[in-house]
Figure 1 (cartoon, rainbow, N blue to C red):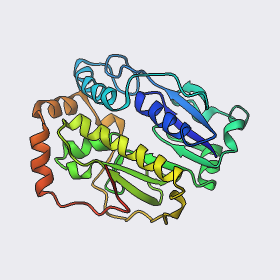
Figure 2: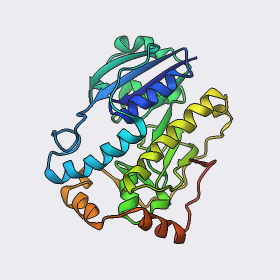
Figure 3: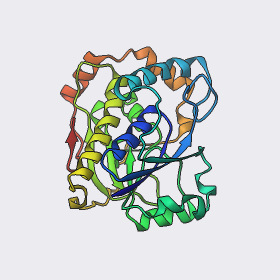
Length: 264
């Protein structure tokens, strides 16, 4: 089996490439590169003291669950480009990666043009870090915690669509709360999404799921990167949300309606 994944270059993205490479003959990884020091370097997220403090927690949780930056496996073929350049590529540079059995998108920039048409036609799978249809857009699991709704932290595995995070859903993946802080809790949602997807690919179970159209009118938030400001990050950090707070919120929460949930 050949797999093509469109992703990014943080340890969690490299972790998915490694997982896919472990169950495939070859994995083609198109990697859109961003800074590996968000908050310290101006990039997708702005450079500021508060962003540096916020992302120090994110990076610590990522290091704990996915390890540090590393080279890819020998059966992972990689093509590295700058984030945002994906839609400028013609077919020729991607030709090897366009004859796979499975296509996956995780953490790539918004895909348009001929490539989105190609991927939608081939029923590509998107890993959306957030529970659709409730939270869509950017940094969804942060916003779920910001709203005091840790029961909406998770991932949606759905068919890629031309609209953002709006394709038919195959299943949801959510983290079970352990003895951890909110940053590890949200990062374990990433781990649950990846582990469930790769396990179901390896066992031939993925094609058994019937795609379900997302329910209209269920959206709680649709967020863009511009919504995640220094003021918002500083306010969240000042709340000092801890494991006890998460447990208390989860104990009284009305759970969202999930499809074929994987809980880890």
